[in-house]
Length: 148
Image (cartoon, rainbow, N blue to C red; front, side):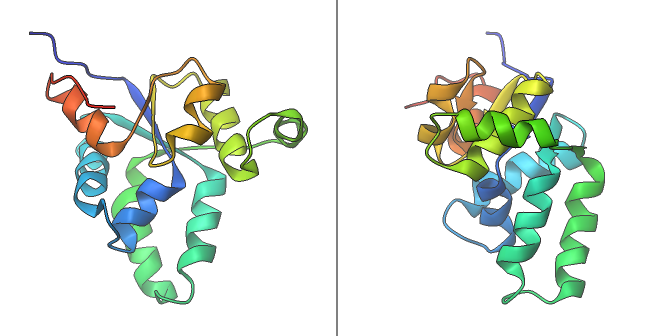
């Protein structure tokens, strides 16, 4: 049985937040992020995600705790930039969520092998890149057929 191993996986902001804020889905998110820390898969984020995580967590995490988490994870990941032209492209997009459109644009430009998100409806219809929830990606990595 072949086991699917993507070379690069773009991680949506919400997956990082699941782990950082210990939300529903935190275990699956943590497993995926740990695969990146151990260099078993190449985890990619947009710089926009890092900014959004900082903004969203500012009232529940100290700066020191947030930076500790960034040091634990982000230094092991590839951070992609968003550029001015991306804004114009996303304004023209049919995607109903501008932030997701920006992340998808970044993932598309960088030609990642897969996208992992908890919000497939803002990604899957707008790309040919495979889009998985954290649980689906973990199942694929184990060689199982993910359940939609």
